[in-house]
Amino acid sequence: MITRPDVPLQKAAPAIAVARVEHAAGHRNMLQLIELRWIAVIGQITTIAIATLVYHIRLPLVEMLEVLVFLIFFNVASHLRWHEHRLITNRELFFALLVDVGILTMQLYLAGGTTNPFAFLYLLQVILAAVLLDYWSTWIIVGITALCMAGLAIFAHPLALPFDHARGIGSLYVQGMLICFALDLALPVIFISRITRTSRRKDLQLSDMRARATEEEHIVRIGLLASGAAHELGTPLATLSVILGDWRRIPAMRDNPELLEEISEMQTQLARCKAIVSGILLSAGETRGESAVPTTINNFLDDLVEDWEASRPMADFQYDNQIDPDVPIVFDLTLKQMIDNVLDNAREASPDWVALAASCDDGQLDVVVRDRGPGFAPAMLANFGKPYNSSKGRPGGGLGLFLAVNVARTLGGSVTASNLAAGGAEVRLTLPLASIALHNRRAHAR
Image (cartoon, rainbow, N blue to C red; front, top):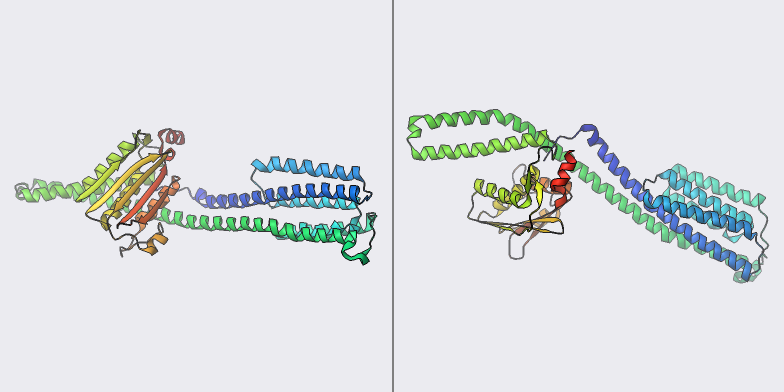
């Protein structure tokens, strides 16, 4: 059902959707930081144990373990908070990195300051900030790490570690520096690769959302044009109805069976046009579900097929309804129009034979329309569902499938197309029955 959206909501919806994508990307990045922090916990415990037990280096163990406990509690709290709460902004990421810088500074202050070979782990924090944070936040982290490094050089007590660089790789300081260098190389490669994938996924989602917003704007324009055209057509259709009624009463036509039959056919088609116009006006003036009529999925499909066959006679139309048991739903004019459009396209491609099959499986409605026409060209399949993607060569071609795809997507389903190996084409509509279920629509209406 094509409705005229409220303008402020229409403008706000894309912004809300973009914000959700941004927050989802931020949430994944925060989880990456939490994982990296657990690696830091394991690394600090291992380093403290080796330094004291293997190399007998004197360290303020109580103070360092207190800082480590604080880091563990902070990470547990972060995991509990951010596991469910997905609204993460640049400020939250900035604060998390700031805490990491503070923890690293405290540990380095207690373990030799700049004489500790692991002081170069500040580079890891700066790299992560450059990837995760906004421009201004990154430079604040750079400034803070520089101040921390300078403060350690001034206030921290040197580590009781022999600077025997002449031993080369045998020097304990050189070994520690090499381990720190390896960490500065390996951890950014691992985590920045993940962060980059998150960023690419976000960009793809935003691109898809922009395309959908463009298509929805196109649908709104089509709906407004259809509504305006329906209003304009009302008067001439009423005039034609009066004229045909007068013709039936003219003796020359009333006494001519052939003319009378043609007039009856004209009145039938005119009534169909008036019903279409009324349906467009109803769709434009009501929100989905407010005037919904209770029915069942089998009755809905059976009536749809009966109406379609009555207005579009053809040589061979096969209808196979395998839905059992029946499911209570509400009559949905938009869904009816969508299936009618797909059937009309199949009839144009294959005037002699069209088939419609319906089934249900795991709460999914599956409607398949097949024909024996020439099939879809590769370019049409590649751009299936795009407006004006048609081989009919007339203005407005392709809008039926474009609207069908977008209506299905709005209802949480999908429309796919393919060519059959034996010739012809197939269009498959998959739709969750919950989107048109009777109890859902009643709840929506309330």
